[in-house]
Image (tube, rainbow, N blue to C red; front, side, top):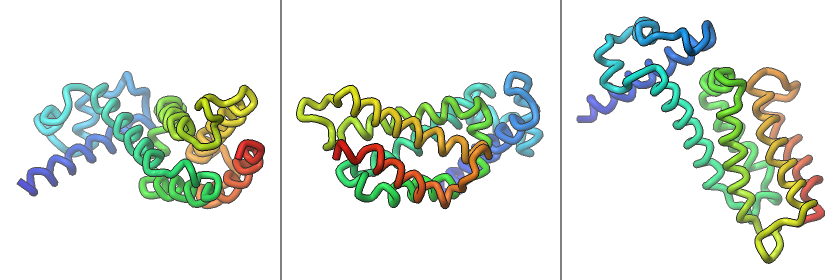
Length: 189
């Protein structure tokens, strides 16, 4: 049973990596199952044992990435986010560095829109329970704008790093971003 499980994981990873690799060479719409199985060096039967189409592979890749990101945010303690902002952002940077090429390819797929929107959604959910919101649970307009600014700034900065558009690295991001987050949110703490 364990060998079958390992084989399944290996096959899915080969398929995933083959699709992502092909997507750096040509548009998704032009990628065929034959392209994927040839690149992954597997047979069609192995592909069909796991997926029905190229679209299903892409949806699974995006779904897995979104789940991984949500797991990071769900494990954070919003009550200590601002006191430990740099630590939390280091966790995000380390998470991305574990499979950096994968995440770089993933954001190239649609300019990062799907992947980054999942980050933003996770951050919104994260901040929605934050203790700095007023007693009714609704932020003031100004506070809402500050939270929105922080959410978009964090997500878009990491996107720019992955796309190679930023002068800062994943290692530098937690230092600079935590300083900026604290400055923006300090009036509301």
